[in-house]
Each structure stands twice: as C-alpha cells, then as structure tokens.
Length: 254
Image (tube, rainbow, N blue to C red; front, side):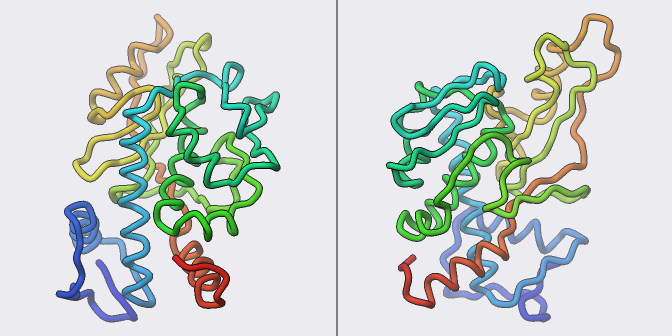
C-alpha cells in the first residue's frame, strides 16, 4: 500500500517515470506493507536513489574489481589508505566523490568482499542522485569496510517477506567451506527484473546464486544455501531530509 500525506497514492500525470521507477511503485502498491510519505518529493527521491542503486550494481558487475576476503583487499592508494582490517579509508587530500568514482573508473585496482561492495554501491548511487558538491559536503570521512560499520547513510537491516527493487537481500550458506569464509553468504542487490547482483557472483537468479554457494560448501554439508528474510536499506527519509536542508539553506544545489 502506498500513501502520500495520508492519502492513497495517485500518480501525477506530469511525472516522467522510467520503467524501473514504475516497477517500484507497482510493487509498493500491491505489497501489504504500508509505504507512507509526507510529500511526493520524498517518494520521488527514494525512487531515484533506488533506481541508481540498481544502476550502480549493474555498473559494478561490468567492472573489473576482484572478489576476495578482507585479508586480501586492495585499493587505489591515490585515493584510499588500506587498513589492516581490509577497509578503505579516504585520504585527506582527495574529494569523497572522486574517490568513489575511482572505484568504478579504475576498478581493476580494487579487490573487496561482498559486504564492502554494498556501501560502495550505496555511495555511488547517492552521488549520482544528489550531485558531487552536496555529496562532498555530507560524506567527508568515508571508510569502506562493511555496511555494518557505516553510519552516514543510516543503513538498517530488518526482517521482511516483502522486497523492493534496490533492496539488498542476504543469501546464507550455513555449510560454507571454512577455508573460504567469503562464501558464507552473499549480500545481493535486488534488480527490477527479480535477478540479484552480488559482488563476485555476477547478475543471476536466486536459484542460480544458491547453486553457486552450494558448490562452496564443506564436502559433508547437507544444508543448502537459502534466501533469508533479511532486508537492508539506506534510510531514504533521512537522506531526503538532510539533502533538502542543505539545498534549502543555500549551501548546495542539487
């Protein structure tokens, strides 16, 4: 169910929505969950960010960044300091937007875990949603390690049976090979055609991803990988309020 200002949603005929945005709205309308927004601008902002999350995931899929564990992570030292934990800490002499773009532009210089890929995709999507000037004002101290450590985007995870395009889902692999901990599970972006992108797994169906993970189990494991009910999202409402405040106070132009 979808509401704006407490009223059942009616699409504005002046909106120029693309196929991805239309798919998201259709999913919201048929879900039993209530999606409520104070204004149409808040809804449009989330639609734009969700679409850009999908596009950023596809662009990462087309890049050359390697899939590895934290111990073997690598990054471009021109933009990032590689920490002992395998995270990427922004250098003081570069702009946050330039550093995020470099991960995509010079992807062959990077290697990271699927958990690190999620904040990278989120930041890249937000950058393309709000522009570099505002992005650099909001995200000055970037540290890319795992979405568990991120606070700038208000990332939150919850249990749900209802998924929207642009959500990050988790495919668990309880019988994973202990010598290959990067295959314990996959954080994957749900695309608008119901396929999933997980860094290191390309764009595949849920069934295909489960099959790949099952090939990475201990030899004696009898428990299949499976799609969980865990859903991860950035806080779209928070991002909208923050960007609106900066824009309305004349600090930046979106």
